[in-house]
Every structure is written in structure tokens, then in C-alpha cells.
Image 1 (cartoon, rainbow over the protein chains, first blue to last red):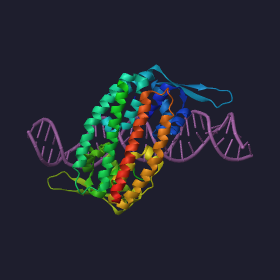
Image 2: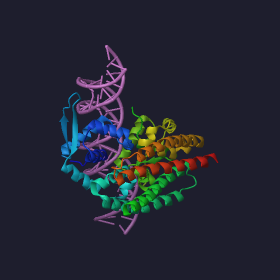
Image 3: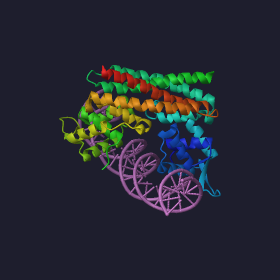
Image 4: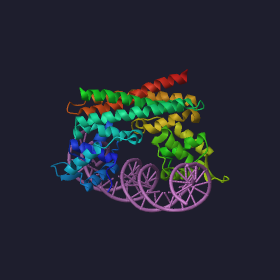
Length: 179
Length: 179
DNA sequence: AGGTTCATGTAACCCGTTACATGATTTC
DNA sequence: GAAATCATGTAACGGGTTACATGAACCT
């Protein structure tokens, strides 16, 4: 059996905060800055099923007077354990390069899942990873031939600036934890 | 028939610059800042097949003395037309929120595909989109309840700062085009 | 009576991941 | 002669996208 996808962990983390129905979760993805996750029923409901099959959540049908019945999902203790395992995973270069969205998802829920010390440690390793990665991108940019177009160079530069902004953010965030 | 995926357009754009084999393209993805695209054969070769089926590229087997034979792919005029169509697509809010990687891919090749005027126009609409989107995220952050964890707030802030860095970058980039 | 919101689901399709397979050529 | 690199492929699997379907309750 596979471990959950990024969407699955997003659902698990939200259910860790509050029990909710599939519909609630869809609305949340639609209405908040977590918009980048899919709010389509074809993604959410099957994902919840899979979490249930793994035993990470349990759905209970509620019959509410005058309202359509819905399934309220709660995280189980196995789900909490899995969430902790995932949140505590080491941070790799590959995470930063190809999976940054999941990196930030992990951090966003880390205080609640693993506590503030873990968040601070996570920021430290993120800072280390970014501090190593960004200069290698700069080297590449500086070495770019003159025949590369302006937009080509600028596109790379925008990525570098994003990473640099994230590095600065991480340093300030770490300071906030250490205060 | 479907239009290509983001990976397909990345391949098409690279083949627009230079003819190449699947292996060349894999190496490129592996060795450059375009690392975030998959370099796995299970992604590249089928994607090239699909582009060929659409008539966007043509692969020709080369028999080179003493070297393993390889298929060299060239972009066709239909492929160039498709690349132009894609590059010239309007920029939507959804692109910015959920598909930023493809937005930057489009821009990175825009000078060569559509010319500098198109790149400048693209930057203008990106600036407009970001200038409208970022404040709505700020509003959301400021309205966050006190019960939201520090890491939760910081995660959102990191996203905002990335968008703000991109907005600043876009303004400078536009100035570079207008000079 | 008819449209909107609440609420959950399913099915087809596509494509990326992972893993395996093959064989030639170059390098040590 | 073994290992690494060049080079191209295939097959199973899983999950996201899109679209469709259903029906109750609420509002006008």
C-alpha cells in the first residue's frame, strides 16, 4: 500500500485540526490560500476513501434533522502517527527543487503536529538547503551564453529571486522561533 | 486529441531551439535549472511520441558510424504554430495560483517564440495579476485568528513574499524591455 | 415552480512514476 | 573483461482531471 499523496496529507492535516466532511474540505480549498490544491470531488472523495482504507481517518454518517446527511471524517490515532512521521521526514535537495509545495505544507502544520522545536529545526535545514542551492543557480545564470535570450535569463532569475526571498523569510522565521 | 502537457511544451520549446534526441533532452532536464521537469525515460519518450503523433515534431533515426543509433527530433511548422499559440495564451488568475511553473516556462521561451514585444506585454499582464492577487492574500493573513499557529501564519507569509518578490522582479524585467 | 446551495459519488481518460529490459560503445 | 555511459523503449500502477449523475433542502 502506498503512502498518501500531497493532497492526502493536506486533507489529513486539516482533519487533524478539525473534523470535517468532504464538502467542508472542498470549500476550504476553494476559499482559502490553499486554493492550489484541487477542490474537485473527483480528487477529494477518492482521496478520503484511500485515507479511510489505510485507517488514517474514519468517516461517520450524520443524519441531521432537516439537513442532507453527510459523512463527517475524523483523524484516527494511526492517522496522527502517520502525520507525525511525514512531518518529521528529513528535508532533501529534491524536496526543495521539485516538491516545494509539499515542503511548505509540512511546515504550515508543523507547530501543531510536532511542536515548535521541530519547526525551528525544519527551518534550519531549509536554510542550509537553500543556502547551498541558490549559489549553484547563480553560477549557472552567470555562465549563460550571450546567445540566450533575455526572457530566458530573466525566467531563471525569477526562480533565483523566489528562492532568495524564501531564504530571507526562513531566517526571519527562525529568529521568531528563537525569541 | 488533447493538447500537450506542460512537459510536452517544455520539450517542444527546447526542440524549437535545437534538434535533439530524447536522451539529449533527458540530460538537459537533469543538468540544468529545468531539473523540476521529469528526466525519466518513462515520461520523456512517450511524450515525444505524442508530440510526433500530433505532428508537432518529427523524429528521424540517425545511423552514425561507431555510435549507437538515435532518433533526432526536429520541430515541425505545425509544432512552431502550436508553440506560438500556447505562448500567446492569455494569463489567468488560475495560471498564477495553480500553474506558475508553466507561466514561467512560457515566459522563458517567449522572446524566441513570439518576440520581445510579446514578452513585455506578458510581463504587464503578470504584473497586473500579481498586483491584484497579493493584497487578497495579505488580507487573509491579517484576518487570521489568533488560534492559528505561528508556522501556519509563516507558511502563508512565505507564499506572499514569493509572489511579492516575483512582482518586483516583473517590474524590473519590464523596465529592461522598455529600455 | 425553478434555481441555488448542500452533499456525495462514479467512470473514462490521461499521464507521470517506478521499475525493468536491452544492447552497443567507451573507459579502466 | 567489467563497469560506466549512450540510447531507447515498455508495462503496471496510481491518482488527478473532467464530466456526469443524483437528490434533498432552501430561497424567491
